Length: 92
Image (cartoon, rainbow, N blue to C red; front, side, top):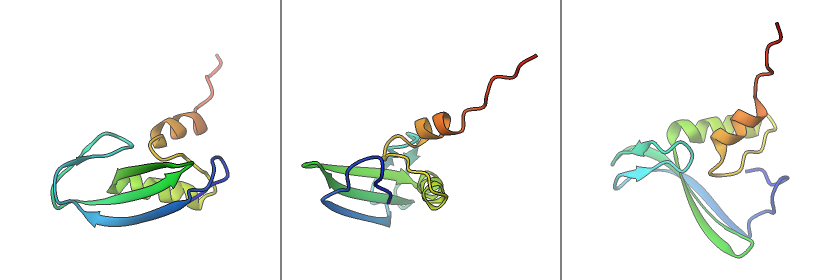
């Protein structure tokens, strides 16, 4: 977890789990099927309790970005990637 762009959570826990029911990834919106592995994140940020569900792929991409020094916010992974890695317009 990185915290340099937002306040650190007062409480935080994350773990890979196997889903007991169908869920939706908070990052890409894909359906996480029952018995499929996903990452469950729960935290208390500035007095608000939040739960984030990430499909396995989004969770691994997020982890890799953090390992490289990037800091995407939960729930905004793909917007962060679009902005951070935007290709410059080609000039003729």
